[in-house]
Length: 327
Image (cartoon, rainbow, N blue to C red; front, side, top):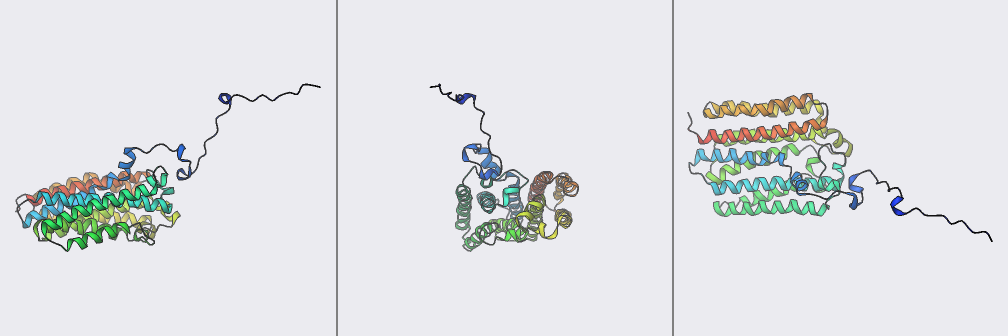
């Protein structure tokens, strides 16, 4: 009988490595995804947007000094905590809601935690809710300190509005109402609320500052949505930018940036230090150029950051102007 030839099997070390599958990061096996880092969590909080939470507190605190010369620093810090925690909470719940809907699957900017698949959706959601809880605790502290018990209802409305921005079955952020939310809550409510709890008065300077800060916040949102206009159309997200189109968005962004400086000129007639606020144009003018001349959507990330930074400078100068002697 002839000897049978046995087929030799190559050792495992000599075998070619299996090819890793590509595709949607959210669908890759968990073991192929890089581990999430602290930097990823910080990025999910979207630090570029945090000046929009700080600015109304600065303006509101300055306006409060017009009606009450005493500086209520504890209340001011509590207001800052409420605003920042709400902003971060909105950013995390937005990450969660857009991620589970698949809206972030085609985004231009940095990958979000939920969409990347590196963190469970529930973890992102619970993080957002935790920041809402922190905002509520700080808000309750303000209520107890000022004895303005109706503020609890205002705080509840703020949290509900923050959740339904992109959460729920019919998020209004998907129906061209995002700018309304930003203007009302991160402009009027945040600024006027900060002024009221410190002085129990609402001078006209607080209203002017609130409108200015609200318009800047809307400009930041417009820059963000202009960057994502093609992707939002693809997934059916009807932001204001998707509804009115690129050119109209560029015009509205320009108007939202210019109007606060007209208000600044008016305030400078009575508070000379406000003229220093024109330095914020060093951030806004490059942002305007980018919004009108960009070629790649990712360039708008810089415009967003510049608009946010300019808002913080503008608000800081108004605080300085309001606490300085008027003419």
